[in-house]
Each structure stands twice: as C-alpha cells, then as structure tokens.
Image (cartoon, rainbow, N blue to C red; front, top):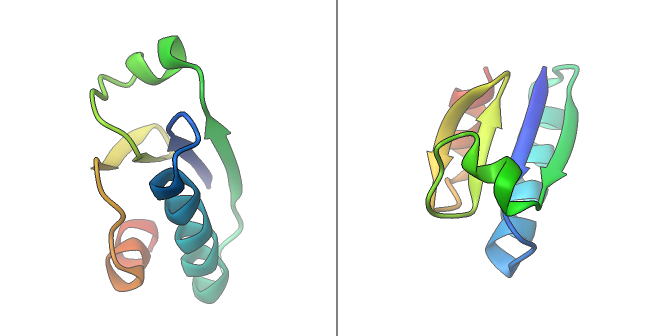
Length: 76
C-alpha cells in the first residue's frame, strides 16, 4: 500500500504522518509512507488544504488529522 502525506511540513502534517504510520503498523499491513511537500505535486491531487492523506492514489482526508481509529478504517 502506498501512503502519501501531502503538506508543506507543518506540525499537523507531522502529526498525520506519525499517526498514519502507527495505524498502519498496528494493522500489520505492508506500506510505504512518503511525504509530499511540493505545492505543485500536492495540487495534482486537487487538494486545497493540508495536511491531506492519500492511500493508493485516493484522497482519504483533507485539512485535518483523523483519529487513529478513523485512520485504521481508511487503511483497512
């Protein structure tokens, strides 16, 4: 599974990356997590607010840090 964290490096972006990694590890799924910080790259996903979570090419969350339970549901 490919997980992308879209954001310019704000504290919420870091928190989303941390929580998403923890959720994926708890689920025991194989994943690759990358941070996308370039605005032009972020815009390709149609995202206007960060942080955003993209799982296997699909935007799952925008402008917030979902709870770990919500993240597990998005990843599972």
